[in-house]
Image (cartoon, rainbow, N blue to C red; front, side):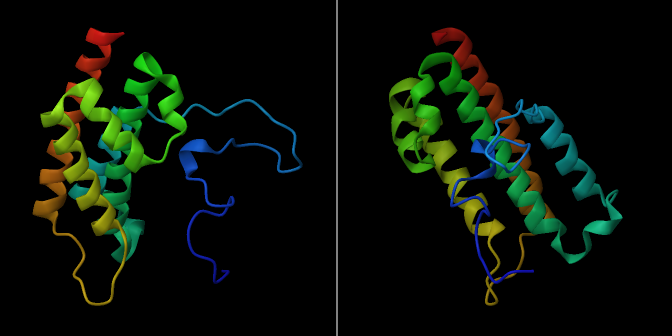
Length: 155
């Protein structure tokens, strides 16, 4: 294991990476799991059905929830403003106010910040509790549904 922190592909998150040959050839994109599939995985982790996650399950759950939330935002952008998908998430959260309204944008921003904080390990903080993770899962599902409705209305 290297001592490197963060994504292995030069700082870009996994949602921008292509899977395939590393020799510079661009292969076909591998379809990513749907938001619903990610939330099903979260339920498996929360129920204890995934036994090989060890002590990492709670932070892994927070990461999956954050990815699902980001994917929901991406899906909105792909329908209403495709260029925004390439912007950093903080910029997307600012733009979200104009497209989804201040209430939804604020709720997405607060949840994204909470998931980001929970997903990173700090020696002085406890891992997120099952109660927190369940609440964040419910919020992620609700916001994904609301963002889908915004996309359908505006698209």
